[in-house]
Every structure is written in C-alpha cells, then in structure tokens.
Amino acid sequence: MSVIRRELHELSRIDVFARQDTWIHRIDARAKVLATFVFLLCVVSFPRYAVLPLLPFVIFPVVIASLGRLPLGWLVQRLLVASPFALMVGIANPLVDQTPVAILPGHSIAAGWLSFASIGLRFLLTTAVALLLIATTGMPAICDALRQLRIPEAFVTQLQLLYRYLFLLGEEAMRMERARDLRSCGRRGTGLWVSGTLLGALLLRTVARANRIYAAMLLRGFEGTIRPASLRALTRRDLVFLLGWSTAFLICRQVPVGELLGHAVIGARL
Amino acid sequence: MSAARNGSPDPHATGTAIVPVIEVVGLVYAYADGTPALDGVSLRIAPGESVAVVGANGAGKSTLLVLLTGLLEPVAGAIRINGLPLGPGSRAEIRRSLGMVFQEADDQLFMPTAAEDVAFGPQNLGLPADVVQQRVTLALEQVGALALRDRSPHRLSGGEKRAVAIATVLAMEPFILLLDEPSAALDPRARRRLIQLLQGLSHTRVVATHDLDLALDLCSRTVVLSAGRVVADGPSDRILADTSLLERSGLEAPLSLQARRPCRQG
Image 1 (cartoon, chains in turn cyan, green):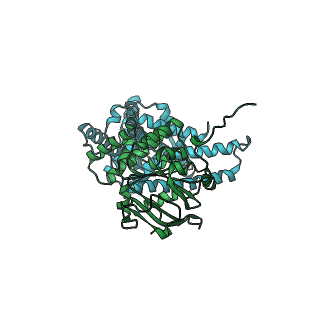
Image 2: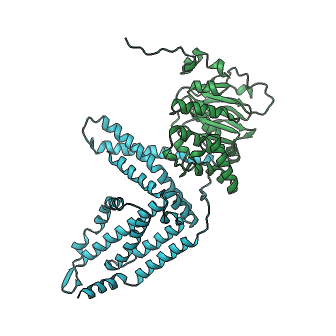
Image 3: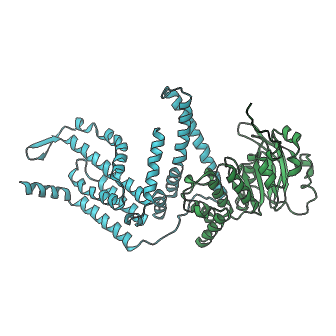
C-alpha cells in the first residue's frame, strides 16, 4: 500500500472516531478547545529542565482517551509518526549541555539529558492532546468553535478548507504516483527529478482547483466570512469541564505536584 | 442589435416581445496567453427556455457560461441579464439571480456536510436561520438527497455529489440555471436520474454539454459553438439531426439517433 494511501486512511480514521457519541464527544467544542489551549500554555511555559512537574499532565490525555473510547494503539502510532521532529529538535542537547545535575542522592546526569527528556515529554503531551481534541470533536466543529471564539476568519477558513481538500489532494497525488509507477517498469522511485516534476504538477493542479472553489464560493454570495452553523449556549457540564480542567492545569503549573509526589514516593521508600 | 448578430438563422432571437432573460451581444473573449475562446457570440434566451450549448472540446462552452456569471470579463461585447447590463456595479445582484453548477462537483462542495454546503449560499444572502433551514430541506428534497444531509461531501458517490451540487444552487432560488457538463462522469443510472431531476425544474436553463442525448432530452433549443462562434441555433430535434452540421462542428449525432453497430466476434 502506498504511503499516501495509508496516511489518507489514517486521516479518515480520525473522522470516524470524531463521530462517536461519548460523554467527551458531547462536551461543547468551545469548552474542549479552550481547555486544550490552557493545557498547551501550561505545558509549554515550564522552564527548560522541567521533567517531573510535567508528569501530572499525563492524566488529561489518558482520561480523555479512555472516556472518548479511543484506542491507545492508534494514539501511540500517530505519536510515533510525528516523533522524529521532536527528536531532531532535542537530539543535540545532551552533547552541548554537559553541566552535571543531581537527580537522586549520589546520582547526576548531564543537564542536556534533562532538557531532552523535557522536550520529548512536551512533544508527547501536546501532540496527544491535539490529536485527542480532533478525535473527540471533529475538525468542522473545532472550526465552528474557533469562529465563535472570535479567531480571525482568515485562519479558520484556511483550516477548514485545508481539511476538506486534504483528501482530494491526497487522492490526486495517489493517482499521479500510480500513473508514474505503472510506467516506470518496476524501477522504484524513478529519481528525484520525476518526483519534483510531479510535485510541481500537483501544486499547479491545486492552485487551479483553489481558483475554481473560490469562484464557486463567490457565485454563492461569499464575502469573506463563513458563518458558524448554529450557536448553542454552553451547558453547566461544559463549564464544569472547562473550569475544572483549567484549574487543575494551572495548579499543576504553579504547584510542583510532581515533585511533591516524587518526594512522597521516595520518602516512603527510604 | 441584429447587425451585431452572427448571421445564423435563429427563429427565437427575432421579433420576441418579451425581455430576454439572457442577452449576449458580440461577446469576444481570449485567454491570458492570447488564445481566442469566444469570437463574437450573440444569443437571446427567453424566460423559461431550456437551451443546450453544444460543441467539441475547446469550442468555448464553459467560457460562455463563466462569462455570464461575471467571473471573467469579456474583451468585447455585452451581456444583459433580465435587461440589466452585467458590470462591476450589477455583478452581485446578477449573481443572485443565477445559479451555476460546476463541471466538477468537488469544486462546489467545500463545506463539511451536505446540509452546511447547501446552507452556505442562503446564509451569505443574510437570511434568518429558520428560513435557511427551510431552504436547505426543500433544496435537498427537490434533488432527492435529503437522506445525505449530514454526510460529508467527499464520501458521496459521483451522482450524489452532483445532486447535492445542484441543491446548493437551488437553495439560492435563482431563476437561471447554468449547468456545465452536468452528466460528465456519471454512470447511466445517475445520468438518467439527473435528467429526470432537471426536467422537473422550471428555471431558465443553459446547459453546456457534449452529451447530445442529454441535450435532446432536456433542451428544446440547441446552440452549436465551433471555434468560439455560433454556427447554428434552433430547435434541438432539427439541429441534432443535422449530421453534416454536427460533423463540421466536431460533433457526432446523438447516440439515440445513430444506428447501432454491436461488436461481434469473428
């Protein structure tokens, strides 16, 4: 199976998840978007060597994934696909930053390892939470929520159209790839030159399609804003979800819960 | 007015007392690279008429439709819709009275669900939410696609996509429908359904197609374009039976009027 086809399949799986009906799926998209935003802010704002204080944040994705009935295997696999980026960012830290840091009495490691672990953990947390948001809410609902939260229309429309046409673009790429492979007589790849040309052709087709879509929008009275589907008042449950999690995140950000827990565990063992 | 016409015999154009819905005079258009697309096209279409614009690939059919919407500007010539000259000032108003169904339904269906896509136009007209919902239901019902309302467009079949694309236009309640190759890429049954659906509409219709059987089924009048010019304009049954005219314009007689030559072994 071609890489493009597999990725398209994975993408459409997330849509299938988003159509489930669980307690988490029923929470208003705005509450989930805002809670995720607070989560991201808290996780990202820790100092560079923070590892232990990040650990309590693992609870949020775990709870959402289990309440939202999302398979762990899927989540892990998606995280693995994206992990090379985080690895590339942090890989040099242990070599560059050799300052020893004591982690346990009598044990010390290079500070670079700590910042590397911190980057890795942050990557896992933020990516997992973003994936879970989409898998429990669905991109269309997220876009509507962003509109209602007064995010500039240009960004939201871009996001919405990108998501809608990702599949078409992927299928187009797949057809071009197939046409190339059928005429390359088993010689895989057929060189960077051909791939480059294909990419160029894909870009041109995409531009042409974008123009046609825009024309279709103009003809139906588009004036720069897509109106959100329907406004629904936030229920008490939505508010409890939002405020509850946000408070928990802020507490975990300000109070070293992880360290306290760590000390408690170590203290109990000693 | 008649001096600017292309000289083709046209019983519909002369002597009509009613204001034509669409009036095109001496329309000239060339692509950005200088390739001529339309070379002096003139047409008058009366209210309620159903007109097929046929021609070989590249004859200028689609260009003509797009020019009627004001998405492209002609090099020369004039377009009047309901007597109103098409120009920068009137474009928005004129677009409200026309609905264009694109050749590729995927270009027309950009919202997450079919219902939202159909609602897009009425919402842009600034209609209240309940009226928008009424129009969505009505339009989807008209094309027989009410059951698809919450489906995402990229999961629909070709025929379903086409039906929803037509609904998106019907929901705007235009009185002119412009259809670009409506039967392209449809299987025979979807094509038959489309023809029935379009037969049931009372709008003034302009159908650009090289599906001549569709033209025969759907349109009482046919305009033949060849190399950007109107080479014939008249009743469909007469025009589409004129084999030598069709051949000269790069077309072939409709399949239903051709003798069948079944493929046999040996």
